[in-house]
Length: 213
Image 1 (tube, rainbow, N blue to C red):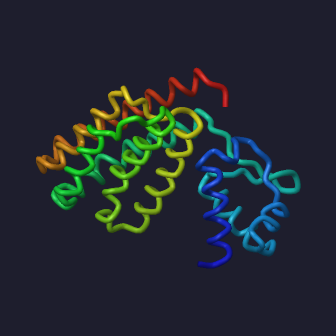
Image 2: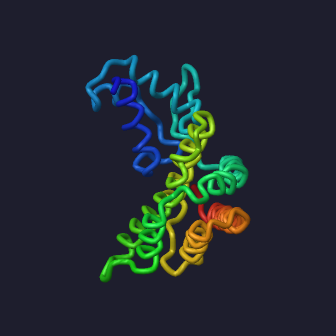
């Protein structure tokens, strides 16, 4: 791994996880010292993160973590609604039944005695696992890169705005998607993924307007 890729991965993880807050100012010098790299890898990492929408670069002024705005939410969910139903359709009949059955079982049978925070992590990880299960079947570098960036933004938005409620219909929606994949019904897959993504958009918009970022 190059020093630029190393810096990129570390900085992006801190942004996506919410450790670096929206509109927080970033310093090249601070990251040089933290990561023990020269200025060039940090600057190159910042440029990539800027192009992907994670940071804002204001020449001769400041570098900021990108805020979570209504416009960003619109762009992320518009992209998801266009991409995800077709990507899941493309994966129809290709994801191993054993893997799907295992995910469904874990969705319906969470470990006992978890704290609320542990439950959030548990279901968020399952959400990411399900949505990532289609990646091996994309077979298109440009779509795969776009999907990865959108996933990272969506994870960041969820970490900042909300987590999956353990009593939420989101869990039922995930089970419905898995059932459609097991049935190998392309039309049902498209329908269930569309419903799930539209509901996620509505929830994100509601949380956005109810909370100040």
